[in-house]
Image 1 (cartoon, rainbow, N blue to C red):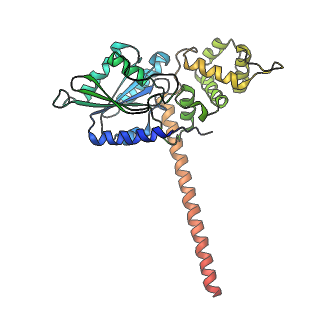
Image 2: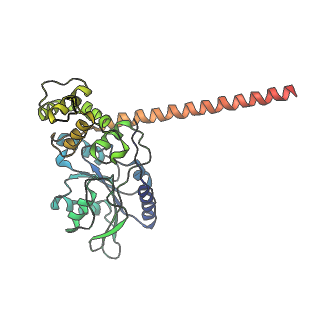
Length: 317
């Protein structure tokens, strides 16, 4: 099932980013979730800030698989005009690396005569507000466990001649990669009313069975792993998610699994590799191309039918 979530304030954020680019912008910081570094990269942001140096920050690295984090850093650092670092938003010293990295990306900017203008963006609930509060040493941005806490843009002075423009968390109107939709929902980036917890939990189990089966077994005391439905039912039994009569309340079991995953209780887990993400993007692009070709073929067939009817009508006349 495709998952989409684009509240009204996100459309306002898109316009605010356009306006900021026009007003002048030196570096774009995009906060990514280190557990899903490809799915949390916003294609809409890339389109809006084309040509600007980019700093990719893999946040929440303490929850991610360190080997895959290294792969993702190498992937992004290989891209032109791009740097990538990993950190935990609440740690003061790593967070200060952002200023150093921005100055390296835009060495001609800095000081009061040429202030550094930096835009920081990210998907909802990626830890951006926590990072900003760590950077400035005070509560400059609201934080919370639900996506969509920040609603308006604000300017923050990090140092003399260094201006950081904070924007609300933003997704994109249509998530064309199905796996990305599930990963974003599992991470907590999408409002809970926009997806079915049981469906997302089943997809999460499929990923865990494929890449981290031992973690799944150890966390929930499972002797073996059957199908996704069987695993979720077993998790429900282990966690006491039962309804009257002793049957498992699958929706509750799904909620419990998602909470434990988001809190890092299953261990350091990354849901995707750069190679998988590339394959998913290609598959989505191929599907879009087929859909466009089918729509064009249908349009031409309809045009031909209308032309035939007009010709027949003229002949009758």
